[in-house]
Length: 361
Image (tube, rainbow, N blue to C red; front, side):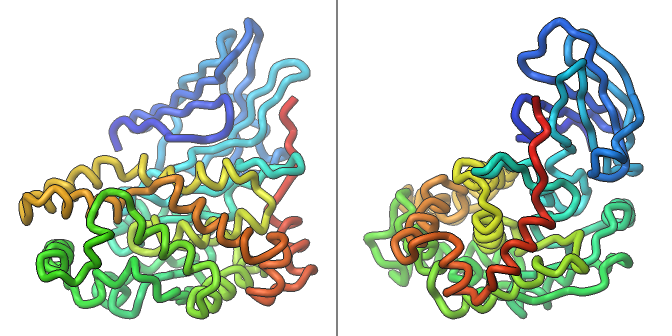
């Protein structure tokens, strides 16, 4: 695995892994005797094994990836943190599978760890990856990809998964891959579309206006309503969890699905935005590589700026969707009920399933 610094876990906690060695830091720690507890499940009563103590709030421990997942608490006297874990799951064949736990709501709760995961496609998992996902007791996969995408890159079978659901929102984000058989042919197709004048010239810049327009459209499109409504109803059934929902790269289609779910759970808007932009942080090196690939096909800077705007994960993109929802509906609950057809009972049940009181003191 090598060295990997988690982009975000919960407030005041930093995690860095170097192969099987994990370093956990508590920010703003005072001089005190801190205890790091670990457990195999994300429930407080299961996080009861004292790993190590520290007077600085920094802990370095040996915890092999292959034996995870691990869930932690830090305590000191009357102080304790919320439960936390490694946000991004350390897999060989996928880089953007991550836990949606630890996000704060507007009413003093947090999303639970170990139940909801989002990510990129599961087509390149190796044996170790599959074993780790089994250890996480993964039961359900929600796949937003098109038929074509699934056919050319089928997910690897995970024995613990009982059900896979296809929820294609028919977004424009997957159109580039509609007839491509690999990433190179997709890149060629994208550049060719620009050179042939198939893209409206007003969008050919780095501003991302077309992405913003698409994000706004997905708030009230029929295809998106069917796909994401199905996803939310799957989440409403506790028999389906732990669950992962994913598309190809885990950015747009999965980003919108995550936004809908976190909005329903009353998560703070800044936390929803944080969850969205994490993909850009995680995929920074991949995006730089994409830029090199695009540059090998064209030297037109406007084209390059446009192509990069399409793959970046900007705050204004997800905020455009949230703002559009606010324009159309008086509240998030009204949107969930009137647009997706959820019931008040389903919404309340989901909040009971996926939220817990914040225990930080």
